[in-house]
Length: 478
Ligand code: G3P
Image (cartoon, rainbow, N blue to C red; front, side, top):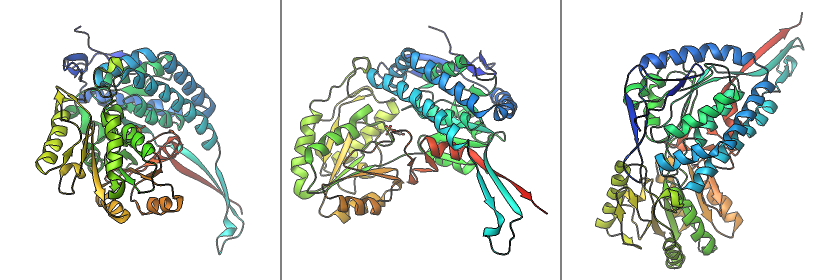
């Protein structure tokens, strides 16, 4: 009971000298579930020193050997799904089946990354000087990709394992060392995941996992002079990190207000099932969740009826039972969602279901006739609440989408592919899905947000490239 999970540094599991711990509240029971070490700034310094020196020899380790170790870690991770899946259920209330899927997807991501790494890092460029005016053929330029150094990875609570490995694997294959700061909700899942890398036999100090309070070590980590790259997924914190970080590459995926634009010729059954999947899976706690439906007035009644019928079938309850809708991550999150719902109520939205909440558990809710003066038209609930705005033209939908300060993904439903492409071009988002709900995967696809939704592009290939720098050597002939 009183056990505090250790943090990982120098290839060992350690107890913090702070003597303090951070407790992780189970979102469903609202009772303390686990405890992790509250690491100190001195411990961060020690980890950074180790990461710097381990990286030097790791960068000289042959690429195929780095890949081999990653494949090993992927296999160990998949063989040890159970403890990670169990802690995902307990600390972030992710439904049991989805928790297993997250771990398997993570193993696949690591393997894919190892394969992609050996291909793209295994080749360089050769340039000749005489293609540029005024030059003879006397300069041969060789280019290759070199690591950045120490990569700091900060994943969010909603995919603690998957969004950690999506940063760890590209960093390592590219020859970087890695310091992981897990989210508090999700820390234990991350520690189990790190143990798989430990068992795979990576060199000491190359990977570390520091747990603790953001207020004590957050800025200290992100502003640490030893850090050469930050890969962060989460909320507004990312904006403040980007303002404080040094002159280093940043990879950031922040919020989203993904719009679902529905034209009058759309297959409404397909739209309805995608609103359910896109809006309510993991209780809407995904940056890529459908967060506003913009439907043509002419088909709005029919669509709302179809979605309502499907919402009625969603199960609500504990994650252990694979309920579709589970408790949201924290009480403050539930309060925030409730605030958006009450604002919509006061301003006259149509409630397709009765609003119901018990603790952190919020029943799925579809809000019709939402107007632009309601907060829910613009803010992301990160909960099982989907607003529907009725539009009288496609332009109105595009304008609403583009007026958002977010620009992660969006989707458009129509049978007319030409219209779909034109709408996709007009939507100011990193990705537009045609006839499907937004989603990050498959994990080798580029994934990026415009505006406040992020910096840089993710997906396996882009992450590897972002965590490297181009190095050139020029041979000068007489
Ligand atoms: O919220 C995190 C974001 O990366 C979503 O991923 O796989 O649910 O689309 P996914």
